Image 1 (tube, one colour):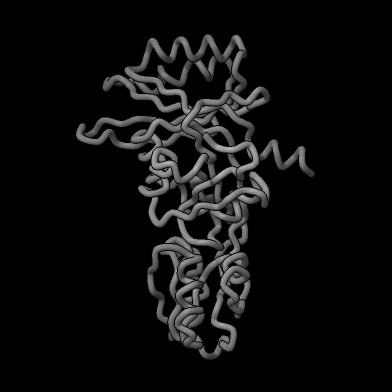
Image 2 (image 1 turned 60 degrees about the horizontal axis):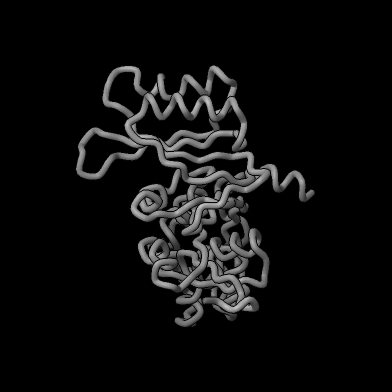
Length: 285
């Protein structure tokens, strides 16, 4: 049993200085204990292994789209969404302390980060790009190597953590670049003033199944915020649908819609009811 004065442990994928670390601190504050995990698989087993109390996982980027591995692992583990946060993604070119931009010949980073900086690479064709596991780990390796010819693309936090030098700021092609993260717990928790509901639904394989599943929500003016389909492992051409709804638990209209959904679907799994990040930001500022 954990002592009352022990810090809450939050696991994230990547190394210190990653965007996920920044998101965890934004959501829960500086007083948490951060638990880096090397892969998504290691991240999603961290609670069961006793390494963390919560998991923070990226679920969607405004440019790259959904993080499919997160969706798939959500079903493999019995985890529940209890909160979410959104952070802006700003990509910087980070070198070792003595480097200058003219020295750089090789840049490494996560493949998504590299893909979001196409204009930079088009303008500097002599710079070779190298795919790496994560953004922050790329900065760490650049600093350890100490070669001015090598740089990394990552966030400002990674530069501070590892003592790197920012050689160029805002390399991203689009400045409106955001990633949404969800906080996962092994125990369900319905937030009293939660206004966002996440479900996963498996439908009958017949014409109109998706329409009939969503119709009870549309008829009651319950807003569908997002829908994502993922294949069912081992059953070709069968799919589950992840739904985000703007709704509050206890609403009679929601209860009626969910009751109809359960009648029309083969499986309905409740993932969580929590406060939307957009609402939290509006109230904060």
